[in-house]
Amino acid sequence: MQLRPIQSTDDQQIKTIIQQALADYQLNLPGTAYFDPQLDHLAEYYAQLPDSQYWVLVDATGKVAGGAGVGVFNAAKGIAELQKLYIAPEFRGRGLAHQLMQQTLGFAQQHYQQLYLETFAVLQAANQLYHRYGFRQLSAPLAGSEHSACDTWYVRELTD
Image 1 (cartoon, rainbow, N blue to C red):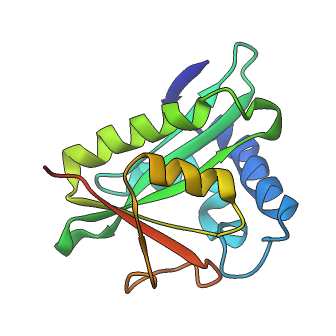
Image 2 (image 1 turned 120 degrees about the vertical axis):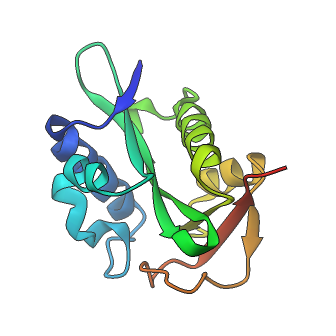
């Protein structure tokens, strides 16, 4: 599996992975990543953001297995957001989310003091992953949240 920054040729595959994962849990709702306007052009979107990046895992045939990104959430407070961490169903259970988590945390630590994320309680495997990597659950979203449908929020300190 190759881990690399997203390219425009990956956009459609990762969009499909994200939207299918949300639809599988009946989370294809307004206020979720399902309807993010940048989904059609993620490579271009992240290329334009300062201190932001999106990575994909690609198998030997060029098929995108999943992806995750880090984007600025509140630059003045040094807060980044872990964004769109999704793995295609046929690639789950292979430790790929751990690879993406390590990549995003390493990048975020170079640029930010905290890493925030928004998710759903029903996504149990994802929530277990966040706990394992030291994220602390919050009782409400941080101010400036764009995904109003999410019901679970986490933050992780990036400095010792």
